[in-house]
Image (tube, rainbow over all chains, first blue to last red; front, side, top):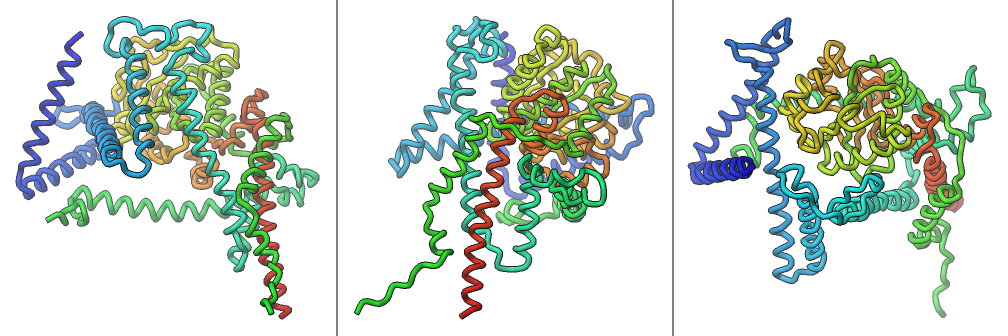
Length: 280
Length: 289
């Protein structure tokens, strides 16, 4: 049972040593390593994509190596690498809020609230799921409610924190947007030009077309026949498909071409900017 | 003599209305239909009908993958979508797997929504976890992982959300690939984030059907994909969820909530018009002078 923590510890130690060595290396070495890694990683997927697949398995095989199966391993590796961004995020939050509390900066009680909520979530999440992932004894009922009759709403601290607090707080935060939209619509949406007038008419048709009350305004028009087009839901769908669709297509083509050019520049290390060679 | 005080014009008067009063108006106008349980007739548009028909046409012996990529911030729109879609899958007797790639909190939110859908269909005995459905948890949506997931599900995911190896989960036995020649017939992305583009990119070559249920603000970008057939159907925000509930004849959260949304939209339109009447009045007065 101890094998897993030992492996995690060993992997972290190796990663830290490698990171320290990289940190000490001269800039040109770091740059060459970055360029080589980027190119090889990109080349792997190019080869895997362009090699004709085996008709029986649909896998790309080169010199007896199954690249499609290797892609799964590479996918797992990138999951681990990307997972470190979470650690970086946590470190950043702890550092920033710790600094605010130490210096008693304005709003420091909010930073204390961050530490309390962060620790509460971490402790009760790990405690609740510890047995699932690492084995050991069952957590007490107030940490993980085992009763089947409480399945819909477990009576434990974790559920209180997650369902009772987190879900409601986040929903509240986003629903505040509705109030800002109302305020902006009232104070800022002024028809001072012809274009603004078109925008307002289209916005009103789409807003009415999205809700039953709006649709009810024109439901006296027959659903089929020459006047059916003037029903608000039909007008709304017409704007979304016949007017909005081509515009979105054009934007999509533009973005696609830009992404292709950007991907090639990054793959071949041709990109220049803050993180691509300007640090010297 | 004190200078004569000019009366404020309509635009100035409207500008002086306390914004908290406007907020209170929105709060009450949204709340009243919900508390009063007002219901309004709903017209089902074409995109939800297409999704409904796509699910109706799925082969019964294949799995559906649901990418549940929403968090608590967009749950008013996306949770009823997930519940309605899962209810349809249960009625069609189609097994499904949940995967989350946008938010670390999504697996738990999806789990509770699916369990609610199963309860609403009175199917806890017929739909046990592991035998008819599985939650594969959260994975970071980097391109290499999505690439490997699209070519081999069991190669990219090793354990489910409860740390059970996939080989021990009956519903995933023999499941590997997407598409007509694979074991997964459809992927439905229920999302409050820009996740669908990656599915087009990586699942397009497999020819698997792709369905989308997204927040209302994201939907306009998806109409070209619906027209081209890359998207088998589309649910737009809470309206999409309500329309799907109507198609299923299974009212849930979304159908009554649409009354609240209706009045909120009318309120906003009314405010825009009032604001512009003032501008128009000022402009007309200026011309007269």
